[in-house]
Amino acid sequence: MTPQAKLIFTASLLLGTTITISSNHWIMAWAGLEINTLAILPLISKSHHPRAIEAATKYFLTQAAASALVLFSSMTNAWHTGQWDITQLTHPTSCLILTSAIAMKLGLAPFHFWFPEVLQGAPLTTGLLLSTAMKFPPITLLFMTSPSLNPTLLTCMAILSTALGGWMGLNQTQVRKILAFSSISHLGWMTIIISYAPKLTLLNFYLYALMTTAVFLTLNSIKTLKLSTLMTTWTKTPALSAMLFLTLLSLAGLPPLTGFLPKWLIIQELTKQDMAATAIMISLLSLLSLFFYLRLAYCATITLPPHTTNHMKQWRTNNRTGTMIAILTVSSTMLLPISPMLPPIL
Image 1 (cartoon, rainbow, N blue to C red):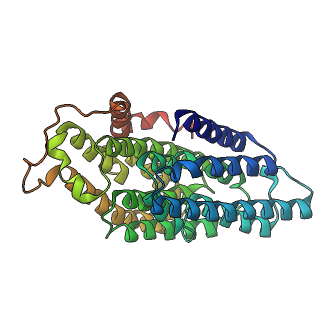
Image 2: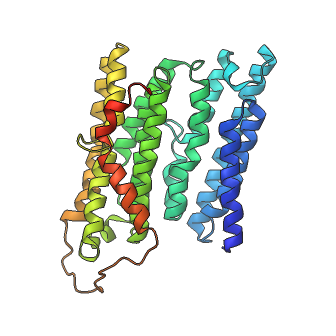
Image 3: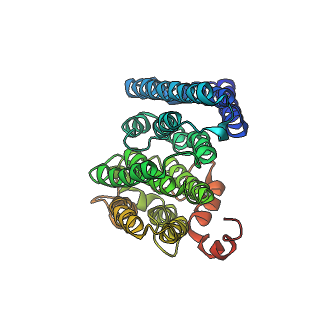
């Protein structure tokens, strides 16, 4: 792919995201989502591998169906209430259809089946965009319509998402699929709190995007796609592997690290809402995903391959994202002390 084409597609991604997050009218939001979908398709299928083409096709079909549902939901609402404003979604049927549409856009259970397959077929950099930037417009729509949506339905979908994201990631050996199920599990945490404290959902999304970017850029730097190749990285880049270990533990949400911050605040808010049983359930289900993060961390740092002399030693990784990885990794592991500053914002 030529640099000019890449520039056009990246600019279109930024344009589509900006249009959706800044719009008040449903048609503008829908147009932004469509621009986004069309801009990411060439980036998914740029390798021309059959699996990449299959991933692009699956992505296109699910996103087109979700966009049609968004349009149908907004038209039904406009038909009954005369309102095209995003925040004025009041008709119950429209709210139900929109919940399904956004769940499909995000890859939230039970509409999650496309996401691991698409991520597996896409390159790591495109996978990073799919996991972070492409989820931002649907999350903003969910944020704007959250007062109208059914909290019980969202809670059920969130618990299902956390459970399936944890269970289905347990037997995976492909790193991209593991990160896809990790994303589904994190979406459960974001969705469960959207009706009660929408700003917490955004905080969770920002921190998730930060940690996922650090992991994807590290994996891209050490050219790792599956667990067996992850095992040989310790001898090549020990420092980077050690930082990957910490970032993965942060993504799992272990206490002294950044990833614990949103989980802690969400559990606190759920308890305030008299939903202690729900908080306990989602916390226990996140232990499932902790297992595969630990397995990734174990493969990255503790396992040594049986013979380490078959490859050339690298005293320096040959990549241009070193500074970015360093900044992101430090942010992904050391932001917990800022938590006392957050209550006034939230």
